[in-house]
Length: 324
Image 1 (cartoon, rainbow, N blue to C red):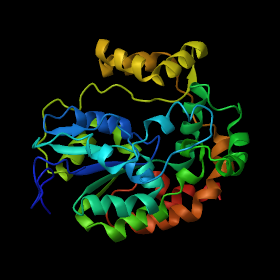
Image 2: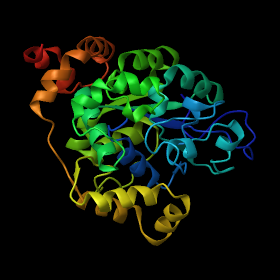
Image 3: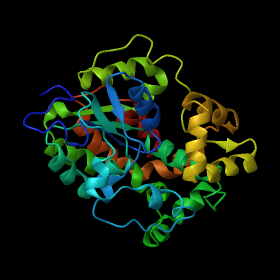
């Protein structure tokens, strides 16, 4: 396996796409991990962090959920030349991006990813499926985009919303099904080119997890790189709903977003966001209601991963026996 950032037989004045991708899953800590990687002096991460190219290449996104016209439809980069132009020429850096749609739309994304770079390294973060779905609901509620106040009502509306082409963050239960995607990545990627971690790892020890990912990418560790990382894209109940919704609308404006980035640091912006969101625990009744939906998928995922990685409790069948 060649070190990340080194490819054979290429014109180094031509953009070559990513050496690595953080492929998902959504609401599992991918933004926190990507920002830690971005801070490394030998790493380049695209702006936007989620160009969605591999999932949506060759298409014209026309998602119809609340706010989709201002967010994913506008931000997605679907033309190959436009996507390659996001990367610097002759940089000598490890080049990467972090579109969580790459994992979810793996059937469309994976062949194009391997066409662009057969030696690409893929980092995946997974989270307890019920907690991931609930976090996605809270995130969209905090932005004023989720019309249902009750999470289980939103889950019941999921088939209708998918049929109406609301984008993937509203696919609360479908995005929490991991086994098919992980199976496809394992089948088509060289064994050493797929790295899987868990949201639990980031929560327990962010710095150590970041260091493990850097070793997977064959990049040197940087002392202190993973320290004092703010919570990123946290979900919960807005303490000041109107303020939170105004911030989301501002972030959807490219001009205002560029101005904010020029005037403030990323760490400052995330610290502000964390102060206006109250983190709410996952209600036990939601776990009892939804956990059976994921049992078969988690059993398959457990069989895929049990011999390769240390599993979190939610992936151990014994720990879920009381929920069946």
